[in-house]
Amino acid sequence: MADKARTARMEKIVALCKRRGFIFQSSEIYGGLNGFWDYGPLGVELKRNVRQAWWNDMVVANDPLFVQAGAPQGFSIVGIETSIIMHPQVWKVSGHYDLFADKMVDCKEVKGRYRLDHVKGRWVTGKLVPKEGAAPAASDEEWFITTTVDGPEAEEAIAKRAGKILGVKSNELNKLQWKGNVTSLATVPVAKFTHVVAPEVNNPATLTDPRDFNLMFETYTGALQSDENKAFLRPETAQGMFVNFKNVCDSTRVKVPFGIAQIGKSFRNEITPRNFTFRSREFEQMEMEFFCHPSESQQWYSYWRDRRFNWYFKHGLKKENMILREHEKSELAHYSVGTADIEYAFPFLDDGEYGELEGVAHRGDFDLRSHAEGKLDKNLQVEKNADGQPKYRGSGENLTYFDDQTRERFVPHVIEPAAGCDRATLAFLCEAYCEDEAPDDKGEMQSRVVMRFHPRLAPIKAAVFPLVKKDGQPEKALEIYQALKEAGIAATYDAQAAIGKRYRRMDEAGTPWCITVDNDTIKDGTVTVRDRDTLKQDRLPASELVSELSQRLRK
Ligand code: GAP
Image (cartoon, rainbow, N blue to C red; front, side):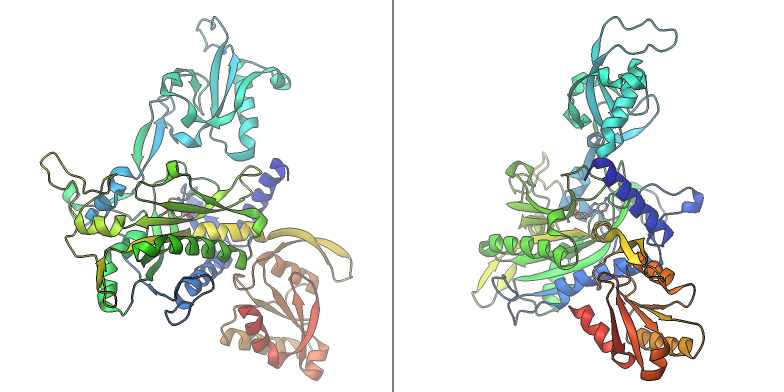
């Protein structure tokens, strides 16, 4: 698909999300707040279903008494819900306090702040149009013209800016002399920043050198706003599992290998939130820490990587839109022996580019050892101050595991599948969006927008319509509607407008089944069930609807 078509598709998805109540900008009536989003009535159901599908697969479905396909052995995974604000030492020991930073640059002229790798630019040769009153530049030089426009549109945005900055008319932009392709500002050596034209200005050399910017939101506990009371909103849910490892072992009968799972909000003060909900400042994570014997960790790493990749297909993402990307050795965190990203071809990215949905990481014993002994350094030794004391003290608790069968005591290794609930929800929205044709009331084909969600993820499973508002049909339809609701099947009732229009409303909401009550229903108790995707209409006894739909939802 051409790049412009991808952008247009994304724009339509964002518009539908607002129009139908999937996702709204946070605090929209006050102009919105960058990086924060609200889920509307349809969106909140969709996201709840994503969460539930993850929890069912990660927590409910497993037990040490049976072995899942492809797993080395049976195991249990228990759930947990930990606080968003944790002891500040957690973040010092985990490394987030020192290391959880992005490189950013400031523009001295417009006071703008940008994440280094989010500024895109291209080298071009030309003579800068001088500022009013200044002498014209003597010779042609190379300039790195930048933009914060992302994805397919970046090249065009840079070309337009270059034309303006170098005084080239819009119909002569093809005469510009480019060197190389669009690339990130992160590839430009700092010594050459004097030749960089920042995104919102028309003159060079206004950017500062790159600096580290810690992404953790700070707050204070209690009345005093002093350094001793400083706390952080958690940037990941994972640490909640590590610091409760001992509590879970002591309070349950779990045996290694086992997992602890959590779904919850995390916060990162992203410098440039972007791409709808993809990079937000407040988002939800679905993380699981799987504790296993070090000698089996490689096997478990492969198992979780493949199982998590397959989970997305089972819920509707197409294989051709996804990749599993194993990190190069140089990309790995210092404690990791393997990490794979599960990525999706979001339409806001260029053709052939993918965005991360989930990371599956082998974390070794880094986290448990750090929380026991103190923050570890690159050599997995406790990092020390000049006086030989640990830089950040651990808890001093014994975070080892004793296997009472083998009589071995060890620090378990950890495999961590870490997914983003909002990113998964966004991917399911993008995949579901489809434009096709369906017959109207007269049987003529008309275009429609249909959200082809997996039925288990669909916000509404069934819509019940009386064909006409008389002859006892509304009463019968309401009876069916109530029975579905009482059985826990998310349903809606609609008696307004022509039937074709009602189908279209439900197609846009992604409702898999529309149930129509007509004259025959009154005579023989059967209804029509129209399938959103095949458009086939089956006739079924109304009394069998609850069991029929429940069965279809289990598939
Ligand atoms: N405990 C490991 C960890 O947090 P991560 O790759 O930083 O790893 C895991 O985050 C997942 O959380 C990502 O794959 C992504 O789906 C989601 N995520 C991370 N930052 C996000 C953001 N700013 N907005 C939305 N989702 C985000």
